[in-house]
Image (cartoon, rainbow, N blue to C red; front, side, top):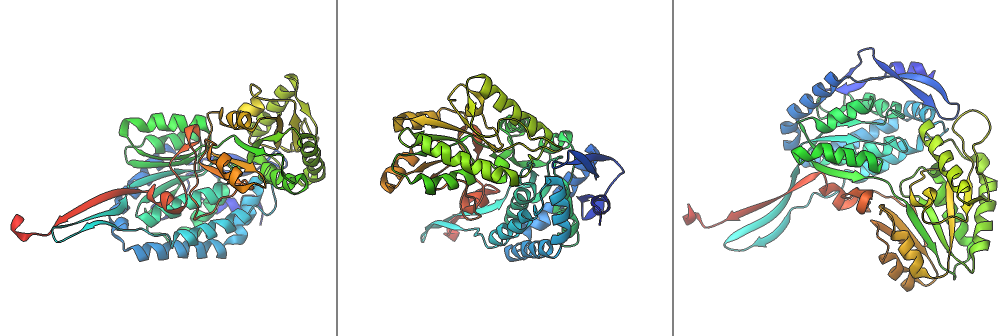
Length: 469
């Protein structure tokens, strides 16, 4: 089946129906730079329809017994597995990488875990006089917006968690990667009750309408810091609940006692996995001066060996941004030990690039590059390295690499970030809370804190003496 034929069966999920109105936008294959399909484009009127449907479905869905909500999520995962082939086809095309459907597979892992996630009732007091408890109740209608780097997995996690708690959802993927999510919508059409889940594809105006719509009570967003700040400002007048994961500029600090031969491949995999387009990827490395040259050599050898199998960047704007950041670094005295300029040929390919002789004040160090570029920075004093790692508006993740685990844990605790590792980097799992501090986000995804983010914590106090009334 051609991609366009597969796309022709897709549409927006609104109130239990697949809807299109003939309006479309182009989807590009990053490996060729060519348009591969025309995707249905939602109108602002469709946003109103989806919001109305979600609001109408909310009372019944929030009152649905918890086990029935869990069973629905399990059935949604079953449908993903049954329809894997079609979703994999369109997801791979819009990501420009064969096998992009692995993201589809992981969405079921997250979904099945979420289906078992606790919604605890906390008993704070239970005496002869009264019972005091805290329960989880739905926030309301959730606007869920996903980025282009992992659109299927990220949006699925948002949807599953919101539904578990009893919320209804209006969801939107990035306009760069909408096809896989619309394929999910078709799989779920006859499983999810009408209005409980609505999925729209469209441009930024559609997302803005979802954010500002008076029906929306919560916004779950994963994307850039700049976009997150705009959304927060738009949500402020109505004091809507926010759950943001906004990326990072993760630092890895490598101490002098490590085995470079063992550590270099792990740091390389963290920095260049997913073409560097992972929020929790290593974005800059601080290496003790005694092993600095050895580490640069090892990382460079891996880059030269593995760059030929690396996929494309997902969007032309990101490709152009990566090229600009490397050019800026070289103009400011940096050295590209490997790579350093775009690959020849079509598509948004950029080679694995190791940059040295840069530091704070150079954009590729100060900003989130979100691509296959890794600045490697020499340090003598570990306190200086910690200060450098923390001297940023970001605060998503960080890591310390050392054989001295106690020292590593002490240093990792000093990193200003939501997750800090010792001898690991880039790890996201459904049971482990994940999110950032400072400009890297608000709240946590995954685990119990991730579930609670989609709930209002309601205190119920019952006085037991009948003579009080």
